[in-house]
Image (cartoon, rainbow, N blue to C red; front, side):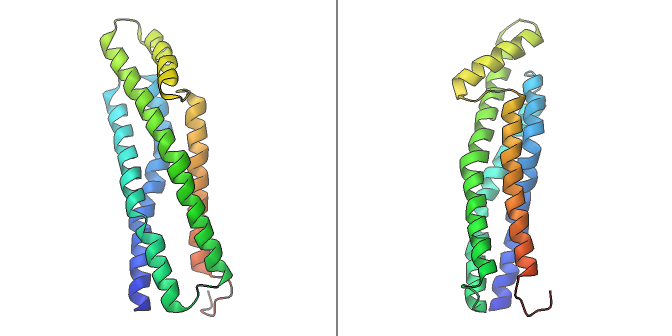
Length: 181
């Protein structure tokens, strides 16, 4: 049963966490492009898709710690320090994703959509629209829809990815393991 849980745990990590890390990393540069050109529908659609990937796979990602816990229980390693550290880092990564990454993605997406809506209804020059809408969208969504907001999002995404990389290393190396790894 241990091998079964381990296989499911690893597959869940690859299938669920992988897409979130990639899509979340692609979001900030996509948001910068979309904010720079409010009329670019493709950029806005790309952002919506990336955000949807992050949300859906974050939900599926709950299987990773659940299956990891089942694996650890069947292996009898629940009290090992490397596992406790991994569980804590997984919790922190989930908190970063849910509290910092996803909400800021939503705010930037709203700002991009507000900018696109204003761009479609006004005849003002594109640069004036971008400046006006960016400021208006920032006030409406509570996020400064500018490169600084995307840089902060990129930083939070990097922290999320670094936490997952650390958990992955701990899972592979397993300090104190007798497997020779």
